[in-house]
Length: 113
Length: 110
Image (cartoon, rainbow over all chains, first blue to last red; front, side):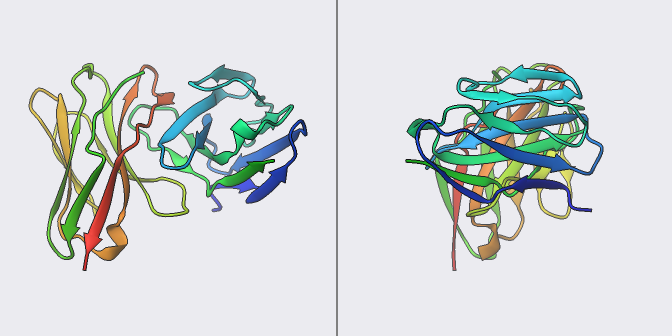
């Protein structure tokens, strides 16, 4: 049981390039979400999804797109990377119930130069 | 977003109990209190959660105030491996939005 898998682990982009951060879970969780964590700070919610075909914005959605075509996958797209998007990105999933814990991936460290 | 307030940092001696406080004065009746911890260079991991009653599991205990406006995570015997950032968060609305603050950075002194 792999849990939540994020790829890649590390990525360097130039300003203006695009890329997709992948997130997959094998726990049949309805809820998935993306967070970013900047140095010395907590996690900030970017986007989340309560099921296939449904997505919504979190605290800091600008510059990021998401889609949820399957229950298992929730990719995060950066259409035109900016240095301000340099961060560590975490994907998380849960059943979506309030008493259900979040399961996190190991993160993707992104640097935009 | 549902707010919690935690001290920025705490220290504990190894093998002593640690009490990590959290204030959540705006909590509503159906919000669950969750605790997570984040070890260096890792994603957060679930520690414990509760609604009204105190909770125990193999990792820690959660003590919830009677008015639910505060809670305390208790590590019964701190080890060096417990050095991490601990986040107290509320599960609100439909349970789909977890907002993390900056947490408490716990240092364990050998």
